[in-house]
Image (tube, rainbow, N blue to C red; front, side, top):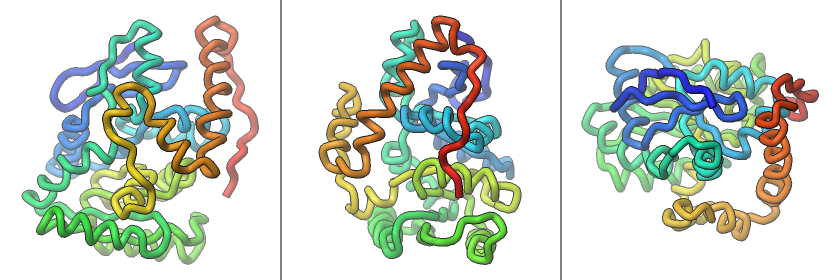
Amino acid sequence: MKTMRSETPAQDTPSVWLMGLRVDPISDSDVVHLVSKAIRSHKNCIIANHNLHSIYLWYHERRMRQFYDGAEYVHIDGMFLILLANMLGVPLKRENRATSLDFFPILAPLAVKENWRIFYLGSKPGVAARAAAKLEAKYPGLQIRTRHGHFDANLLAKQNREVVEEINAYAPHVLLVGMGMPRQEIWILENQKDLTANVVFPAGAFMDYMAGEIPTAPRWLASIYLEWMYRLFTEPTRLWHRYLVEPWFVAGQIARYYTGFGRQYVAPQDTHND
């Protein structure tokens, strides 16, 4: 197990390397501190996240590997990685996992206080707008604008240029991109040089949860590593491959890496193409 020092907010926390992939074991409040630090210093950064699904995609999509290489921070979004780290002798805890559902309630009041603007790109037409209305009611004064994720995301497409222009015209301090893996990461990778937001997050289905489109698992299930079962039960058609097939592939890669057979891993051809 290798570690490296990384500038994390509340403490000097070492990054952890699992299967050669870097993750930063930072808390929800640490994530918000990083946002504040980037905005106040007028810097631009990407705060990525890793879970079991992203590890599977990392092995199958070259641009996912490029995305994570360029991210300033990679927080843990999935109790699987906490469990894996513990199995490998790294004593991580529940608080070393950060998710948008948990850190947004910390971020939103601070955004109101500091007058930060938030832009959310993603979800089906109308979904994010409903979620934003709920968030504005819950956090009076919250500045949040949305744009659905159903557009031609090709880098040179007219629609894509219009989306980037719309985002930059709003000049958000925080940009959340919720278009699902790996589309959201690839979009950030390809457009990051043209985006002016201080902090960019891949956000998955965050606003779908906020809008009530997807039922939210009880938070206590995550602490006993069973959140995935709730999600599989509520969305079997969409998630069966993620929870019933991908773990076996990742388990094989873990075995290969830590027995020495996978250290010189050669990635397969990309299976996700735009």
